Image 1 (cartoon, rainbow, N blue to C red):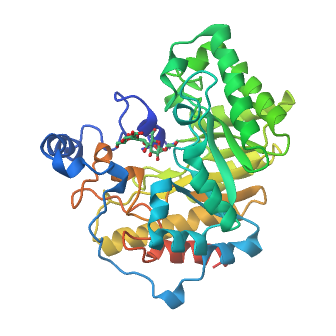
Image 2 (spheres, rainbow, N blue to C red):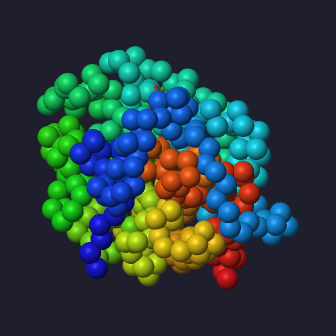
Length: 390
Ligand code: G3I
């Protein structure tokens, strides 16, 4: 099967690399023209633009067991990504606290935020999220240390030994600061190129350091916090049968064999139902990574159903089934230790940005378990069914 995914990281990639299913499509043209016309409507950050209610069935409160409670017997973490501003919303806090036991700062631990100038660290942006996690007995996943995107501009001007030293200093400063408070780090994010090459991506400045920059990054993170679980995280590596997932497997295998302290692999899981590996391929992939002795986590899951055919009820039902089967694939392998959603409510999602075509009432993707009014969608029932072994 040929995979040509949406992904996420195309999100993070430069403008030439738009999320492929949307690029060049009517939705994108529409989005560009609306962008030109909507100056007033674009004052809110795109992620904060509420969507019109989606319609379709919602679960009655009695049907909605807290996800974290349902997941506890399975020994899997159920997580969400968040931004501090979202915590000002009481409904958001309530749903987050009730349902999730793991939190990933969506942007606030990225290089451009935490080390905007060489050696000058700024940790405060993530603190409200860490405080909320501590209050609610949540684990924190740190995202992310070495990534070509959301990199501070000064780093982009470096190369060779200066870049290598900056990378090590960054890791030491950030991991050292949050030592003991961050359980897992995405140490290296999205290092692999898209497509069949199996190489490191050409648009990352770190690639020029040679493949052992990855080894060095993990070693530095381990030195800074020997108790943190250290992950390689990427997109389009979710299922067996693609060159990129094979390249990720080969990378993690090489690191393990070289004694590099890599403890896990993150499969981002930004699902585009129109082209996505079958659950069995995902299960087989999780199993092969687990056989290397690493944990596997689904680190950024969302299921964008806006563009599939059918009524809203049919879309949400398909979303429920896809989500169920992916959660079940994680549960089928002992080493799969957590499932994090890239947000919790359709009100706030990176996919709501005009860049991805989801302007109000046009191409909403409805990607997350709770709707824009915090009501549980059928997706929640799919997660609960999978957690219960149904
Ligand atoms: O910081 C500016 C702020 O100053 C400005 O006022 C605001 C106006 O909209 O924009 C802010 O920057 C935005 C930033 O998020 C922080 O909110 C950027 O425009 C926006 O592009 C950026 O998007 C983030 C994206 O990573 C960047 O690559 C998304 O929120 C975030 O969800 C997304 O997350 C990535 C993961 O880290 C890695 N995997 C893919 C995933 C989805 O793309």
